Amino acid sequence: SRQCTDLVRLGLVRELPELVESSGVGRPQIPVDLNTGESEGPVAGGVHIGVPGSTFGLLDLRGRLLARRTFPHEGID
Image (tube, rainbow, N blue to C red; front, side, top):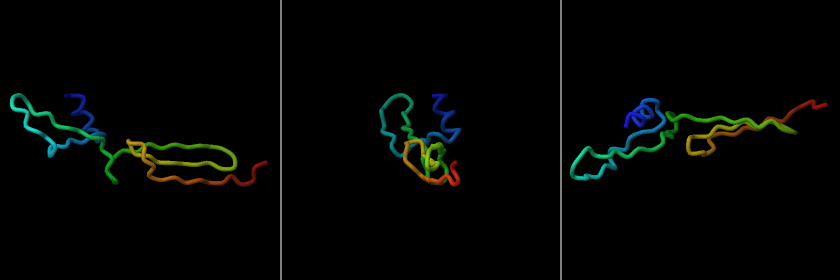
């Protein structure tokens, strides 16, 4: 579909032509999956600001944690 083509072009999903099964008539359906490649897939970031520190995290589109770092607050009055 046009929407899927746009998502592929944006790098959010990727086609899996190796999983195509012959259905006989008509255009074959090509399965797609989220693009979560180690260096190519998009990521989302999050920040939690709290006491006694702040935490920053990066996740892939499946919600898997890629990186997390906590920074303690110093000199809180």
